[in-house]
Image (cartoon, rainbow, N blue to C red; front, side, top):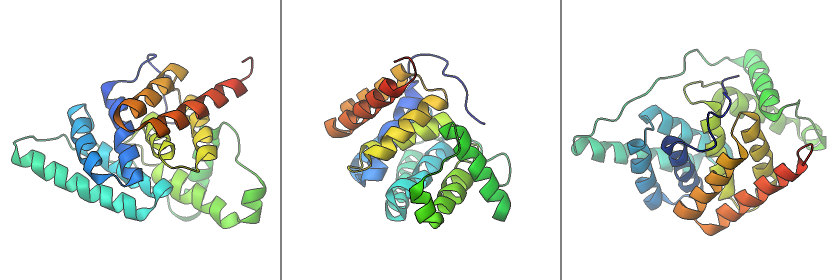
Length: 221
């Protein structure tokens, strides 16, 4: 599992920068994404970090917004090159992504680790195809790419889901997963503040409500 315990109670500038990049990409706000990408690269995101975040958008907001966001990243990088800025490429995945049955097994393993238990339910019995797509495409194809750590992927996911009205159930699930991969409640409160300061009040409110529900549901709370 490529997740590490939180080293502090605060998000680094790089971690903070993930949130608006993911949020603006998922909401389709390309003008503000342009600014957020530049700020993220200045804060320590590599080119491949940014690519991974924007590819991951497809799983939560669809291919059109992922493709549009990647196109904007290309423009940002070219503009920075013309100003003499050479951004670090960053690593690629350290191993090949499995295929076929091996991909399903890897995705199931990752999903179980992230969620803290096997993910089951009537919805997945009713529509087993969506269960397979989640395991193979999201938790397999995407989360097997180890050049972006799971904490960063969950910061991105929470940022995306916070801007999507009607995705509160999924947002709550990923708040729990974010804590499972080592992000502290104080860091997730800081994430909500980043949304308030750099994105909008509504996604910040959704993030805070989801975090409050997850903390209230924890044993001993």
